[in-house]
Image 1 (cartoon, rainbow, N blue to C red):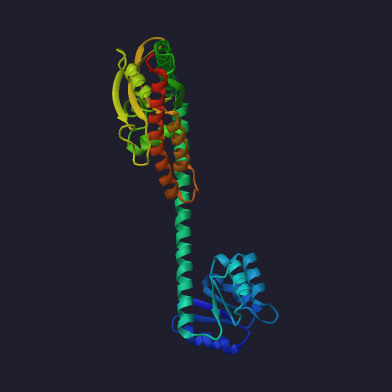
Image 2 (tube, rainbow, N blue to C red):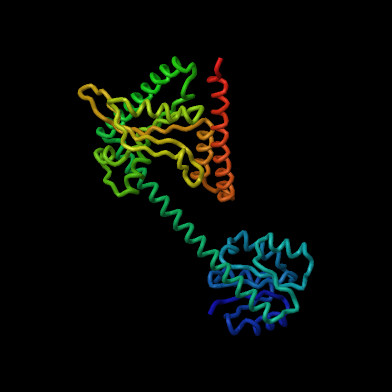
Length: 356
């Protein structure tokens, strides 16, 4: 049976509580706070709950709680205050100090039993949940350490360094071709088709995580064969039709191979994400060979790029409250952005394509 420590200077109260709880618990008693602390020091981990009176000589209940907090015992057992006090400020003070519940005198048998049992059950559930959270955090910590170690080994390999140089080369090649297209577009239409280009090379940790998640071997050959987004180029355009025009001009160049196309503008993701993704195989000219390398090119509008940056923070930043509510708001913003992008495009057409 679980053990309960009842602390009250009145023997009558101690015996009343004993008679109410002794069928379900092993009862230990103490006539004041000092005796209670002595008993807790001896076997506090065996105590399932502490029933503590507030008004006692030598050491009152508040002093006992203060000592328990200093000794760290409040994390090991729930404390239920037993008192004739009915003042709200007294009860609030006890709860603020860490007490789990309050049992008022005179005692009602069913209320005492239920409150003690429920408090112990809730406290145990909380501890079990905290233990699981701790175990999960430790497992994630070990996993991160393994990933970091494997990523470091990968990044130290000479063949990996050579591969990353090749991926940087394909990013520069795609960026260069986009700038050429922009120059030609500007000459014809008197405006730029895109606002900016951002290049991103996947980190060794991200590469390792993705290979492991998909069950692929951790080799240079596996990276080239199975990953398509190691080299990433993001093209930020002003208007949706510029996205499609620029993507078509790039992908139909005779030495570029379009491997895959994902149109999240016409078919947005559930969270509202809109972008055009192209997986391309692009030739790069190395010192001793011409080699085709894969690159992922993403096209999105300025507003959607800002939206995606905010959504990324929601997805990966920890300890954010109301994530579901924020997700709904972001989805509404994404829908508004789409409408605004096309309205702005219509206004642009009226300005630039008006007939003289």
